[in-house]
Length: 408
Image (cartoon, rainbow, N blue to C red; front, side, top):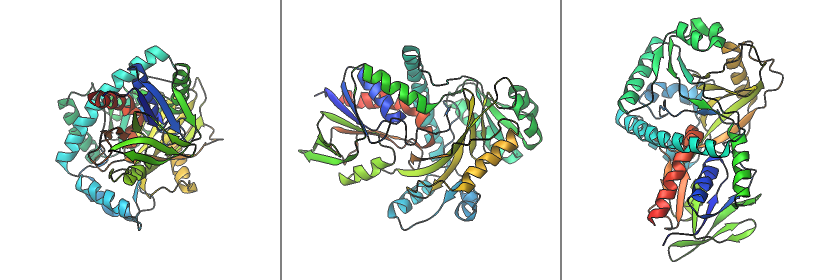
Protein backbone atom coordinates (compact mmCIF):
# COMPACT_ATOMS: atom_id res chain seq x y z
CA UNK A 1 0.00 0.00 0.00
CA UNK A 2 1.29 3.46 -0.90
CA UNK A 3 2.36 5.34 2.25
CA UNK A 4 0.64 8.59 3.17
CA UNK A 5 3.15 10.04 5.63
CA UNK A 6 6.86 9.96 4.79
CA UNK A 7 9.56 11.09 7.19
CA UNK A 8 12.78 12.35 5.59
CA UNK A 9 15.77 11.97 7.89
CA UNK A 10 18.24 14.73 7.00
CA UNK A 11 17.91 18.32 5.76
CA UNK A 12 20.95 18.73 3.58
CA UNK A 13 20.32 19.43 -0.08
CA UNK A 14 19.59 15.74 -0.77
CA UNK A 15 17.05 15.48 2.06
CA UNK A 16 15.39 18.78 1.20
CA UNK A 17 15.15 17.91 -2.49
CA UNK A 18 13.54 14.62 -1.44
CA UNK A 19 11.04 16.44 0.77
CA UNK A 20 10.30 18.86 -2.10
CA UNK A 21 9.59 16.05 -4.57
CA UNK A 22 7.52 13.96 -2.16
CA UNK A 23 5.40 16.97 -1.21
CA UNK A 24 4.81 17.72 -4.89
CA UNK A 25 3.55 14.17 -5.34
CA UNK A 26 0.99 14.50 -2.58
CA UNK A 27 2.63 12.86 0.42
CA UNK A 28 2.41 14.21 3.93
CA UNK A 29 6.07 14.95 4.67
CA UNK A 30 8.07 15.48 7.85
CA UNK A 31 11.79 16.26 8.06
CA UNK A 32 14.07 15.54 11.02
CA UNK A 33 17.48 17.22 11.28
CA UNK A 34 19.85 17.77 14.21
CA UNK A 35 21.32 21.00 12.78
CA UNK A 36 19.99 23.88 10.72
CA UNK A 37 19.10 22.88 7.14
CA UNK A 38 22.13 22.69 4.87
CA UNK A 39 24.71 22.94 7.64
CA UNK A 40 26.36 19.57 7.02
CA UNK A 41 28.20 18.65 3.83
CA UNK A 42 25.94 20.99 1.82
CA UNK A 43 26.88 24.19 3.63
CA UNK A 44 30.23 25.15 2.15
CA UNK A 45 30.41 22.85 -0.86
CA UNK A 46 31.97 23.73 -4.21
CA UNK A 47 28.76 25.43 -5.45
CA UNK A 48 29.12 23.90 -8.92
CA UNK A 49 26.26 22.09 -10.64
CA UNK A 50 28.24 19.75 -12.88
CA UNK A 51 25.59 18.12 -15.03
CA UNK A 52 27.69 17.38 -18.11
CA UNK A 53 31.26 16.63 -17.03
CA UNK A 54 31.32 13.88 -14.43
CA UNK A 55 34.56 11.98 -13.95
CA UNK A 56 34.43 9.35 -11.18
CA UNK A 57 37.12 9.54 -8.53
CA UNK A 58 37.54 5.77 -8.96
CA UNK A 59 39.55 5.80 -12.17
CA UNK A 60 42.40 3.62 -13.54
CA UNK A 61 44.80 6.56 -13.12
CA UNK A 62 44.54 6.16 -9.32
CA UNK A 63 46.97 3.21 -9.40
CA UNK A 64 49.87 5.39 -10.57
CA UNK A 65 48.99 8.00 -7.94
CA UNK A 66 48.76 5.54 -5.05
CA UNK A 67 52.21 6.16 -3.47
CA UNK A 68 51.53 9.90 -3.41
CA UNK A 69 48.04 9.40 -1.99
CA UNK A 70 49.42 7.36 0.87
CA UNK A 71 52.61 9.31 1.61
CA UNK A 72 52.57 12.89 0.35
CA UNK A 73 51.33 15.53 2.84
CA UNK A 74 50.50 17.89 -0.05
CA UNK A 75 48.39 15.48 -2.12
CA UNK A 76 44.85 16.78 -2.84
CA UNK A 77 43.66 13.20 -2.39
CA UNK A 78 44.71 11.71 0.91
CA UNK A 79 44.35 8.15 2.14
CA UNK A 80 45.41 7.72 5.76
CA UNK A 81 44.89 4.10 6.88
CA UNK A 82 43.50 3.79 10.41
CA UNK A 83 42.39 0.98 12.69
CA UNK A 84 38.92 1.20 11.20
CA UNK A 85 37.58 -1.91 9.44
CA UNK A 86 34.95 0.17 7.64
CA UNK A 87 37.66 2.39 6.16
CA UNK A 88 39.64 -0.63 4.97
CA UNK A 89 36.55 -2.28 3.51
CA UNK A 90 35.65 0.91 1.65
CA UNK A 91 39.21 1.57 0.53
CA UNK A 92 39.68 -1.91 -0.92
CA UNK A 93 36.35 -1.66 -2.75
CA UNK A 94 37.43 1.74 -4.09
CA UNK A 95 40.66 0.31 -5.49
CA UNK A 96 38.71 -2.55 -7.02
CA UNK A 97 36.50 0.02 -8.76
CA UNK A 98 39.52 1.77 -10.31
CA UNK A 99 39.25 0.05 -13.68
CA UNK A 100 38.08 1.27 -17.08
CA UNK A 101 34.85 -0.75 -17.27
CA UNK A 102 33.62 0.36 -13.85
CA UNK A 103 34.56 3.97 -14.55
CA UNK A 104 32.67 3.87 -17.84
CA UNK A 105 29.55 2.38 -16.25
CA UNK A 106 29.66 4.92 -13.43
CA UNK A 107 30.02 7.78 -15.92
CA UNK A 108 27.00 6.50 -17.84
CA UNK A 109 24.84 6.22 -14.74
CA UNK A 110 25.89 9.59 -13.33
CA UNK A 111 25.22 11.40 -16.61
CA UNK A 112 21.71 9.93 -16.81
CA UNK A 113 20.96 10.88 -13.20
CA UNK A 114 22.47 14.35 -13.69
CA UNK A 115 20.27 15.00 -16.75
CA UNK A 116 17.19 14.00 -14.75
CA UNK A 117 18.36 16.16 -11.87
CA UNK A 118 18.91 19.21 -14.05
CA UNK A 119 15.37 19.06 -15.40
CA UNK A 120 13.89 18.75 -11.91
CA UNK A 121 16.16 21.51 -10.55
CA UNK A 122 15.08 23.88 -13.31
CA UNK A 123 11.41 23.13 -12.58
CA UNK A 124 12.01 23.97 -8.91
CA UNK A 125 13.79 27.20 -9.83
CA UNK A 126 10.89 28.32 -12.03
CA UNK A 127 8.34 27.56 -9.33
CA UNK A 128 10.21 28.84 -6.29
CA UNK A 129 12.56 31.54 -7.70
CA UNK A 130 14.92 31.15 -4.73
CA UNK A 131 17.54 33.77 -3.87
CA UNK A 132 20.62 31.54 -4.09
CA UNK A 133 23.09 33.40 -6.37
CA UNK A 134 22.29 31.08 -9.28
CA UNK A 135 24.31 31.54 -12.50
CA UNK A 136 24.65 29.78 -15.84
CA UNK A 137 28.09 30.96 -16.93
CA UNK A 138 29.55 27.54 -17.80
CA UNK A 139 32.64 25.75 -16.57
CA UNK A 140 36.30 25.31 -17.53
CA UNK A 141 38.23 22.25 -16.34
CA UNK A 142 41.94 23.11 -16.55
CA UNK A 143 44.73 20.64 -17.31
CA UNK A 144 48.39 21.36 -16.68
CA UNK A 145 50.04 18.75 -18.92
CA UNK A 146 49.62 17.20 -22.34
CA UNK A 147 49.14 13.77 -20.74
CA UNK A 148 46.32 14.91 -18.45
CA UNK A 149 44.70 16.77 -21.33
CA UNK A 150 44.78 13.62 -23.45
CA UNK A 151 43.14 11.66 -20.63
CA UNK A 152 40.47 14.37 -20.45
CA UNK A 153 39.92 14.10 -24.19
CA UNK A 154 39.17 10.39 -23.81
CA UNK A 155 36.68 11.14 -21.02
CA UNK A 156 35.14 13.82 -23.24
CA UNK A 157 34.76 11.33 -26.09
CA UNK A 158 33.12 8.84 -23.73
CA UNK A 159 30.68 11.42 -22.42
CA UNK A 160 29.86 12.57 -25.95
CA UNK A 161 29.17 8.95 -26.85
CA UNK A 162 26.87 8.68 -23.84
CA UNK A 163 24.88 11.75 -24.87
CA UNK A 164 26.38 14.47 -22.68
CA UNK A 165 25.64 18.13 -23.37
CA UNK A 166 27.94 20.05 -25.76
CA UNK A 167 31.50 20.57 -24.53
CA UNK A 168 34.88 20.89 -26.22
CA UNK A 169 38.62 21.03 -25.74
CA UNK A 170 40.00 24.56 -25.77
CA UNK A 171 43.49 26.03 -25.93
CA UNK A 172 45.01 28.25 -23.22
CA UNK A 173 44.28 31.32 -25.36
CA UNK A 174 40.66 30.24 -25.71
CA UNK A 175 40.51 29.75 -21.94
CA UNK A 176 41.52 33.35 -21.40
CA UNK A 177 39.03 34.53 -24.01
CA UNK A 178 36.26 32.63 -22.19
CA UNK A 179 37.44 33.72 -18.72
CA UNK A 180 39.70 36.80 -18.79
CA UNK A 181 40.53 36.42 -15.09
CA UNK A 182 42.75 33.46 -16.07
CA UNK A 183 45.19 35.70 -17.93
CA UNK A 184 47.83 35.38 -15.18
CA UNK A 185 47.65 31.58 -15.39
CA UNK A 186 47.88 31.35 -19.18
CA UNK A 187 51.39 29.82 -19.30
CA UNK A 188 50.55 27.14 -16.73
CA UNK A 189 47.74 25.56 -18.75
CA UNK A 190 48.01 22.88 -21.44
CA UNK A 191 44.33 23.34 -22.24
CA UNK A 192 40.87 22.83 -20.80
CA UNK A 193 37.44 21.38 -21.35
CA UNK A 194 34.75 24.02 -21.72
CA UNK A 195 31.15 23.14 -20.89
CA UNK A 196 29.09 26.28 -21.57
CA UNK A 197 25.87 24.96 -20.02
CA UNK A 198 27.11 24.31 -16.48
CA UNK A 199 25.72 26.26 -13.51
CA UNK A 200 26.58 27.39 -10.00
CA UNK A 201 24.63 28.43 -6.90
CA UNK A 202 24.98 28.88 -3.16
CA UNK A 203 23.76 25.53 -1.83
CA UNK A 204 23.30 26.78 1.74
CA UNK A 205 21.11 29.66 0.57
CA UNK A 206 19.05 27.25 -1.50
CA UNK A 207 18.61 24.93 1.51
CA UNK A 208 17.35 27.90 3.55
CA UNK A 209 14.92 28.89 0.79
CA UNK A 210 13.67 25.32 0.39
CA UNK A 211 13.04 24.94 4.12
CA UNK A 212 11.01 28.16 4.22
CA UNK A 213 8.98 27.22 1.14
CA UNK A 214 8.31 23.68 2.36
CA UNK A 215 7.32 24.83 5.84
CA UNK A 216 4.90 27.34 4.30
CA UNK A 217 3.36 24.49 2.28
CA UNK A 218 2.80 22.29 5.28
CA UNK A 219 5.95 20.18 5.59
CA UNK A 220 6.71 19.65 9.29
CA UNK A 221 10.32 20.25 10.37
CA UNK A 222 11.80 18.79 13.55
CA UNK A 223 15.08 20.72 13.86
CA UNK A 224 17.63 20.26 16.61
CA UNK A 225 16.54 16.63 16.83
CA UNK A 226 19.04 13.80 16.39
CA UNK A 227 18.08 10.47 14.82
CA UNK A 228 19.47 7.71 17.06
CA UNK A 229 18.02 4.54 15.56
CA UNK A 230 14.80 2.75 14.69
CA UNK A 231 12.06 0.67 16.25
CA UNK A 232 11.27 -2.38 14.08
CA UNK A 233 8.33 -4.75 13.97
CA UNK A 234 7.34 -7.28 11.34
CA UNK A 235 10.10 -6.28 8.93
CA UNK A 236 9.10 -2.63 9.00
CA UNK A 237 10.21 0.51 10.80
CA UNK A 238 7.38 1.58 13.10
CA UNK A 239 9.21 4.59 14.54
CA UNK A 240 12.44 6.51 14.33
CA UNK A 241 14.18 6.79 17.70
CA UNK A 242 15.20 10.41 18.18
CA UNK A 243 16.53 12.67 20.92
CA UNK A 244 12.97 14.03 21.19
CA UNK A 245 11.37 10.60 21.47
CA UNK A 246 9.93 8.15 18.93
CA UNK A 247 8.64 9.53 15.63
CA UNK A 248 6.07 7.52 13.69
CA UNK A 249 5.42 7.58 9.95
CA UNK A 250 4.38 5.19 7.19
CA UNK A 251 7.78 5.28 5.47
CA UNK A 252 11.22 6.78 6.03
CA UNK A 253 13.96 8.11 3.76
CA UNK A 254 17.46 8.02 5.23
CA UNK A 255 19.34 11.01 3.79
CA UNK A 256 21.83 11.71 6.56
CA UNK A 257 24.98 11.65 4.47
CA UNK A 258 27.83 9.58 5.87
CA UNK A 259 25.90 9.07 9.14
CA UNK A 260 23.46 6.91 7.18
CA UNK A 261 25.99 4.08 7.23
CA UNK A 262 25.97 3.82 11.02
CA UNK A 263 22.18 3.89 11.28
CA UNK A 264 21.78 1.29 8.53
CA UNK A 265 24.26 -0.99 10.30
CA UNK A 266 21.98 -1.02 13.38
CA UNK A 267 19.40 -2.68 11.12
CA UNK A 268 21.85 -5.22 9.72
CA UNK A 269 22.28 -3.46 6.36
CA UNK A 270 25.74 -2.54 5.10
CA UNK A 271 25.97 0.69 3.12
CA UNK A 272 29.32 1.16 1.32
CA UNK A 273 29.41 4.83 2.34
CA UNK A 274 32.39 6.55 3.95
CA UNK A 275 33.12 10.26 4.43
CA UNK A 276 35.44 11.98 1.97
CA UNK A 277 36.50 15.07 3.86
CA UNK A 278 36.66 18.28 1.86
CA UNK A 279 37.44 21.92 2.59
CA UNK A 280 36.46 25.33 1.30
CA UNK A 281 37.08 29.02 1.72
CA UNK A 282 34.77 31.84 0.64
CA UNK A 283 36.21 35.26 -0.12
CA UNK A 284 34.66 38.56 -1.10
CA UNK A 285 35.41 39.84 -4.60
CA UNK A 286 35.32 43.34 -5.97
CA UNK A 287 32.41 43.89 -8.34
CA UNK A 288 33.06 45.44 -11.73
CA UNK A 289 36.63 44.16 -12.05
CA UNK A 290 37.74 41.27 -14.29
CA UNK A 291 40.01 39.86 -11.60
CA UNK A 292 37.73 37.14 -10.19
CA UNK A 293 36.19 34.51 -12.45
CA UNK A 294 32.56 34.54 -13.52
CA UNK A 295 32.92 31.18 -15.26
CA UNK A 296 33.26 28.25 -12.85
CA UNK A 297 36.77 26.81 -12.95
CA UNK A 298 38.13 23.43 -11.89
CA UNK A 299 41.89 22.96 -11.50
CA UNK A 300 42.16 19.22 -12.18
CA UNK A 301 45.72 18.90 -10.87
CA UNK A 302 44.95 20.45 -7.50
CA UNK A 303 41.42 19.01 -7.29
CA UNK A 304 40.18 22.51 -6.48
CA UNK A 305 37.07 24.24 -7.83
CA UNK A 306 36.33 27.95 -8.07
CA UNK A 307 32.72 29.14 -8.32
CA UNK A 308 31.36 32.69 -8.33
CA UNK A 309 28.33 33.04 -6.05
CA UNK A 310 27.14 36.62 -6.12
CA UNK A 311 29.88 38.91 -4.83
CA UNK A 312 31.82 36.00 -3.35
CA UNK A 313 34.18 33.35 -4.68
CA UNK A 314 33.84 29.84 -3.30
CA UNK A 315 37.06 27.80 -3.45
CA UNK A 316 36.67 24.15 -2.51
CA UNK A 317 38.54 20.93 -2.89
CA UNK A 318 40.57 17.99 -1.64
CA UNK A 319 39.31 14.57 -0.66
CA UNK A 320 40.60 12.89 2.48
CA UNK A 321 39.73 9.40 3.63
CA UNK A 322 40.45 10.16 7.29
CA UNK A 323 37.25 9.19 9.09
CA UNK A 324 34.91 11.67 10.76
CA UNK A 325 37.56 14.13 11.95
CA UNK A 326 35.93 17.57 11.59
CA UNK A 327 39.02 19.63 12.43
CA UNK A 328 40.31 22.18 9.92
CA UNK A 329 44.12 22.04 9.66
CA UNK A 330 45.58 25.45 8.88
CA UNK A 331 47.73 24.06 6.07
CA UNK A 332 44.67 22.88 4.12
CA UNK A 333 43.14 26.35 4.20
CA UNK A 334 46.52 27.84 3.29
CA UNK A 335 46.62 25.49 0.29
CA UNK A 336 43.25 26.75 -0.94
CA UNK A 337 44.27 30.36 -0.47
CA UNK A 338 47.57 29.77 -2.27
CA UNK A 339 45.77 28.12 -5.19
CA UNK A 340 43.42 31.10 -5.45
CA UNK A 341 46.27 33.60 -5.36
CA UNK A 342 48.10 31.64 -8.08
CA UNK A 343 45.18 31.39 -10.49
CA UNK A 344 43.46 34.67 -9.65
CA UNK A 345 46.02 36.85 -7.83
CA UNK A 346 43.85 39.97 -7.71
CA UNK A 347 40.47 38.28 -7.15
CA UNK A 348 40.14 39.38 -3.53
CA UNK A 349 41.81 41.16 -0.68
CA UNK A 350 41.63 37.84 1.22
CA UNK A 351 40.69 39.62 4.43
CA UNK A 352 38.23 36.92 5.54
CA UNK A 353 38.54 33.32 4.34
CA UNK A 354 35.55 31.73 6.10
CA UNK A 355 37.17 28.26 6.34
CA UNK A 356 34.86 25.24 6.23
CA UNK A 357 35.05 21.47 6.18
CA UNK A 358 32.43 18.88 5.29
CA UNK A 359 32.09 15.11 5.10
CA UNK A 360 30.98 14.09 1.63
CA UNK A 361 29.22 10.71 1.77
CA UNK A 362 30.94 8.64 -0.91
CA UNK A 363 30.60 5.13 -2.29
CA UNK A 364 33.63 3.31 -3.74
CA UNK A 365 32.31 3.55 -7.31
CA UNK A 366 30.86 7.05 -7.03
CA UNK A 367 27.30 5.82 -7.65
CA UNK A 368 24.82 6.95 -4.99
CA UNK A 369 22.58 4.54 -3.08
CA UNK A 370 18.95 5.34 -3.87
CA UNK A 371 15.88 3.34 -2.87
CA UNK A 372 15.40 0.16 -0.86
CA UNK A 373 18.08 -2.17 0.48
CA UNK A 374 17.59 -5.96 0.54
CA UNK A 375 18.72 -6.22 4.18
CA UNK A 376 16.74 -3.23 5.48
CA UNK A 377 13.07 -2.89 6.45
CA UNK A 378 10.76 -2.56 3.45
CA UNK A 379 9.48 0.91 4.37
CA UNK A 380 12.97 2.40 4.79
CA UNK A 381 14.54 3.93 1.69
CA UNK A 382 18.02 5.38 1.24
CA UNK A 383 19.28 8.48 -0.51
CA UNK A 384 22.98 8.88 0.17
CA UNK A 385 26.49 8.27 -1.19
CA UNK A 386 26.60 11.12 -3.72
CA UNK A 387 30.18 12.12 -2.89
CA UNK A 388 31.11 15.51 -4.32
CA UNK A 389 28.02 15.49 -6.60
CA UNK A 390 25.31 15.81 -3.95
CA UNK A 391 24.20 19.25 -5.13
CA UNK A 392 24.28 18.18 -8.77
CA UNK A 393 22.34 14.93 -8.29
CA UNK A 394 19.95 15.88 -5.48
CA UNK A 395 16.78 16.55 -7.43
CA UNK A 396 17.15 13.58 -9.77
CA UNK A 397 17.78 11.32 -6.79
CA UNK A 398 14.61 12.67 -5.17
CA UNK A 399 12.58 11.63 -8.22
CA UNK A 400 13.99 8.12 -8.02
CA UNK A 401 13.13 7.86 -4.32
CA UNK A 402 9.57 8.91 -5.11
CA UNK A 403 9.41 6.30 -7.89
CA UNK A 404 10.63 3.61 -5.49
CA UNK A 405 8.01 4.60 -2.93
CA UNK A 406 5.26 4.48 -5.52
CA UNK A 407 6.26 0.96 -6.51
CA UNK A 408 5.57 -0.16 -2.95
